[in-house]
View 1 (tube, chains in turn blue, cyan):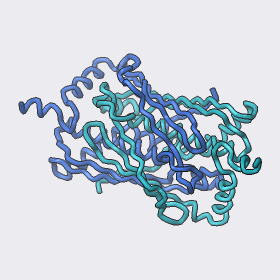
View 2 (cartoon, each protein chain N blue to C red; view 1 turned 90 degrees about the horizontal axis):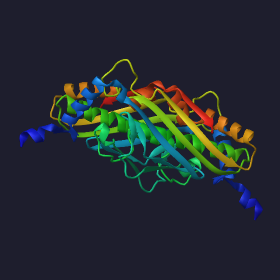
View 3 (cartoon, each protein chain N blue to C red; view 1 turned 120 degrees about the vertical axis):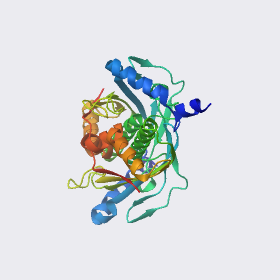
View 4 (cartoon, each protein chain N blue to C red; view 1 turned 135 degrees about the vertical axis):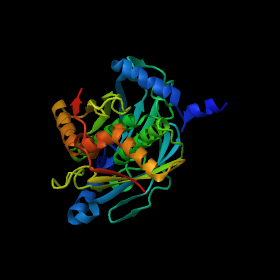
Length: 187
Length: 187
């Protein structure tokens, strides 16, 4: 069944993908999504996010049978006991995951079969900012470097083009590189 | 042993905290940290980040005996099979975790005992951006709303003040609200 084999590329059902794109083009309102996280503090730098429901395609999504949980923590040197990746590392994970998924989807759409995708991310921070010691340095990373290693059935120039397109369309790359208006309130 | 009881507030060893702050004030170079994530693609929208080593306090940190892993995925409506929170949700987790830890540390430093901290985060997105259908909408969230619910042994005005200070010093809030110069390269 070579036709069935071809339908799924890089683990993405391309028939469903193109049908989804057509449906959104026809009815742009269904493109409105809202994602949510509930977080509760456990102790010290240990807190836990619970992630389940979201709004999308014109309705509240109830397809997730169980919630995902992600624990946060800090290493001893930052006054924690390593109960999870720290928040800055979690942000790097979000960026890596989004760039990778974007890359895999773009490659599927452009008929580029991938065999391996890895990325290494580094973020440099002077913690005098977030520790409240200095107003001269920013709180977050000064810069982030992402280096991809990609293998697939396409020349390097094609893989580079797919990575560029994926970066240009990544939701988290957009947010991390340009920022998002964010309000924090006491409810 | 009331003195020992007082030393640890909100799960944070305040003696160690103030000693750390003094050490950084005396030797600002030790404030330079580098956090890292390694991510590898599994299939479709499923990828996994591995998080262990980092550089800080003048040396490569080797205190973490094992790596943390965080899986990413997408729900069916976004062409995945729910192998983990999606990247945009992971970014909300990073923000929630950082604000919460910042809040807990600031409260510990200011002698405010906390009993409960919860937060709800919402991000609104028009997925026509990240799906490449429209150049009129951005790829990421248009805005993010964070609502905290905080209980502790302090008047509401004090809790509000602590939350404001925590937000002003949060590394991830800084990055998400202002953006970070980010480079993506094929290695």
